[in-house]
Image: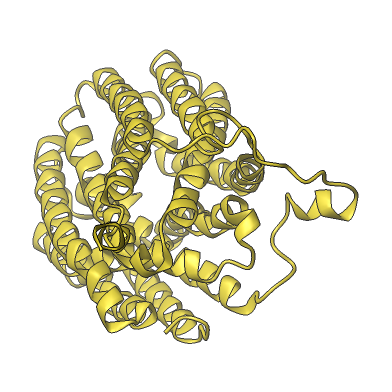
Amino acid sequence: MDTQTVKKRPPYRIGVGLAVGVLSWLLPYVGVNSTLLPRLLQQIAPAQKVQIVAELATIGMIVAAIANVIFGALSDRTRSKRGKRTPWIIAGSIACAICFWLITITTSIPVLFVIWGVYQAALNAVVGPLLAILSDLVPKEFKGTISSFYGIANSVANPLGTIVASQFLTKVTMGIWTMIAIELILGFLSVAIIHEPGNQDAEVEPLHGKQLLEAFIFPVHGDLRDFYLALFGKLLIVAAHYVIVGYQLYIFTDYMKMNAGKAASSLSIMSTILMFAGMIFAAVSGPIADKIGSIKKMMVFASIVFGIGVLMPMFDAAPWTMFAYAIIGGSAYGIYNSVDQALNVSILPSKEAAAKDLGILNLANTLGQILGPIVASVMITAMGYRLIFVAAFVMCVIGGILFQMIRRVN
């Protein structure tokens, strides 16, 4: 009886480890990508800052598209005393920290492009394997609950990265060093908490010819319809979020005409609202999804409400509209983050290629974080800031429609 009771409990330790792991890579990424790096560009290339942000995003998108698949596939086939995911998480965290350090000592834009490309590769060596732990170690009946840990961390890391980074707008190098410490400390803590079992004795099936090719490409067998609907739906939602987050500093300074001090204060307020709204709704949404047995409905609802949130700054170039976005959008993004990974593991074409396929699904997150600023840059350059919020709203609506079309998940 006691054994059965233990088996029926969600594996909360894994959930905590996943949450710490998400904080380890996402908080530094958001802090550097959305605040510290744009601020650095204001200092070293003020006239080209908007264009350079878009170019960095393009480089990141190309590298991430390749690295996500490669590192996921390599992780699936890794055998070690620490398991198949842990070695990649550790190595990737160290490489990310080195790239951040290099950013602090260069003033060359071409060199910065190279460093950012290497960083994106290292980042995806962490992200794909970390996500695969949810598929590897969590029973189906608890995926929504444990996914909520991921969602809480995601909801916290996005705004907290901005809150922390905004304290260093006048001390960019110190801010990046802070992100290095977070990356390393939390990355190592994550794998220690998860304590992935060793798999050095597990067999690895040799790959030849067609099998070798398929191990490193997008899935081509199995039930693929829902897989690709989820992929593109997620891409649009995350891109909509980063249309705003990727240019949030410039929205306050250029669109709302605020000085650096007031912009930093407003960023902190907005990010705090985002963090608490997202955290609260992420905490309750995963268990609710498990209870009602409907991940899809939660995703569609979150998409629609998030669309309303991202539209708010269009109505007035004043800080209150960004705070309204934080309340509405933050709540919806918390719901989305809570059930996002539960949806992912429910539509995988093959469990044997879990990390590779989850890496591809995670491209929606990675590429969305990159596509959003690219879309925003093009629209800002052509038509100004106001219409980027309309574009984000349209992305949310289309994303919700794609989620509604999924069949295998209720």
